[in-house]
Length: 117
Image (tube, rainbow, N blue to C red; front, side, top):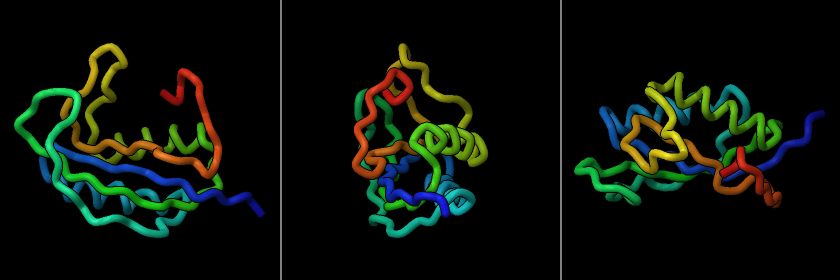
């Protein structure tokens, strides 16, 4: 049996049908784990840059057997499947996006690598 870990993810969208992008991401998560709980959906202004489009944001508890790095790759692929045009480059800063999924916590691990930043 694979070791399962509970992770916490943040999801956000501020382009197009924001709620549909969040729903796509939530549905896609079932391919590699189980969504155990979700927060309410909150509308918030962009942070780190100026944009007139507010975000819809939420968080969820997600149980998976993927290790942290495999989870990151899975989430990047899920973002593309749900319509994210491209990842923001490190040097570009923040930008509007169709869907963004970030790992907030991965069990009790502390991961500090260039790939995790």
